[in-house]
Length: 331
Ligand code: ADP
Ligand code: MG
Image 1 (tube, rainbow, N blue to C red):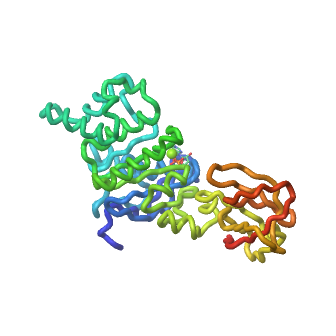
Image 2 (image 1 turned 180 degrees about the vertical axis):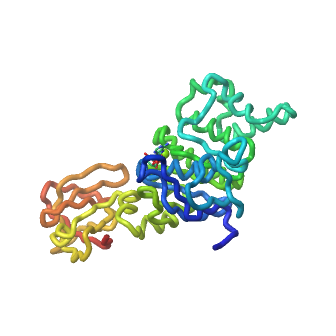
Image 3 (image 1 turned 30 degrees about the vertical axis):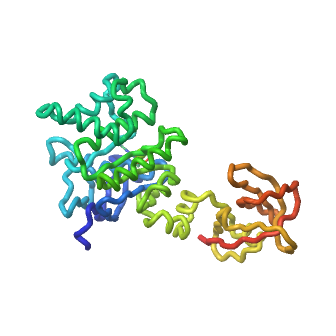
């Protein structure tokens, strides 16, 4: 066992009372200092439970959570639950909604140095680009702004680890990119180790150094976003991370793929469509405009497959389009 890991979970299990298949089972993984880890899985897969176990807000039934090689103590063993070096931004933000933004954040610092307190609070607000909101009440902010206040509260005391539960769930798609960039900046410039969970793994692909795929309370697989996207070890991972076509074995054979296993996965970008004479091809069924590309719904021997099209040709229903499936995976 490598004892140099920053955070390590060894065979961690937690089952909720009277709920035999709840919680998490036999979870093992390690997290390096200063990295961004995204834990992805569908709703109910145990993501929030894992965050509470890591921070010591809950004790495992079995196994150990280590922080810098030392066991994280659970709520039974501490006066104030939660590890001092870790801060968890919960899904409900936990703000004092009728207080001003400034006071929400400054309240976490002591009053022994009032000048320093003000300076530090403005520093953190500027870092998260909410200094212009200082005098507003939290209740008057948008979800995205409240999220930033909650993050400011979490980082102002200088934690080493920041954990976030679904930080993108209440944020407009347009503002997601900004928040992603700021979370990355936090990890890189402040050296904070970030662990976040999301039911939408697309949030993770762009952000994570490492991803952990959780299914029904167990770790299915882990790795870099690029590796998990391009080489998923499980159908679940492919469906979670990619907008993929899933064919049954019979459908695959109809479409010309000699499948041996039950499921065949084809990513839309693994199909190339090109002009020119080609015996083997697809029938055009429909087109969905996606901005910088079109998603084509194609048909091959009655099997429907979605593909990406970036060309300019205009097709009519049942036009023949030459092309081929360059790659597929079997599960
Ligand atoms: P996620 O955050 O991925 O949606 P959770 O960690 O909240 O998943 O929950 C994992 C599983 O444990 C779910 O089946 C959920 O119903 C169950 N669970 C979570 N919290 C409790 C609780 N306090 N009591 C009983 N069961 C719970
Ligand atoms: Mg949750």
